[in-house]
Image (cartoon, rainbow, N blue to C red; front, side):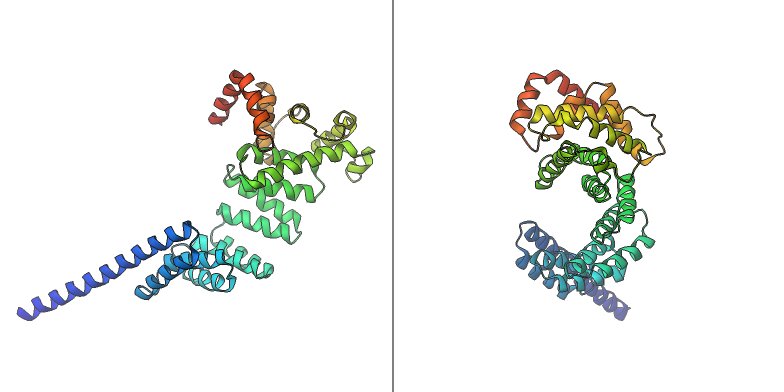
Length: 331
């Protein structure tokens, strides 16, 4: 009986020691994450290393340390650690797949990164972020049809993911599909007006308008289309009206006018809820026109370019803008 008690006591002490070590590792990881969030990456790595000395297989510590190495620009170590987490196929697997692929891309190994993403997609086909990164890498490899496919799937899985709309816009522009590019750009700017990328997106949008203004004939933009699709007909109409654009977008009022014209064209078709473009964009834009929110929408998406002018318009049209925002919140 006494031997049994001694064994139980020793087992309890051993278990307590293990639990204490696990707890210490978790504390170190939390401290490391806080340091990482404060951009103290080297200090964060030291915390994660200490955690791994306590618990060598801790996937959280490996992932977080890989992320810190990535931020420091050491893509070799980031790839090495994130691959270990990917191979373990446990906690932090999804995040580590993206980090591993990103590390490989930074090393110039885009084809290998693509294979990593493709293999991961077989295990998790509904992973929206993975779809987005696949779209990005296909775009970088200039495989635009595949990039379009994954950008669309990413939006289907999460319409609120702003970067997917931006990705789709640049993919469509690379394929000379200007109207589709504008449609996605406008929606991206609806979701993001405060980042550096939003300013670039606004410049891209006004550049497309300028391209219509500078086109000398229908053949410049419609050389391959023969106006076979709805979007091609819209593009042809924009081109025929290009003399009204002057040198492109000169100020907010002109941007609003051109946006309202585009939305009116886009609302002039019957929408099919099973069609990607109709479901994710055209139904939304049609409602904006029907509710007479075109000007409110245009000013809202242009906030990244001239907030002061937008605020002046909002103060002078507060009732309309409030109704627009209330409607937006219901979408």
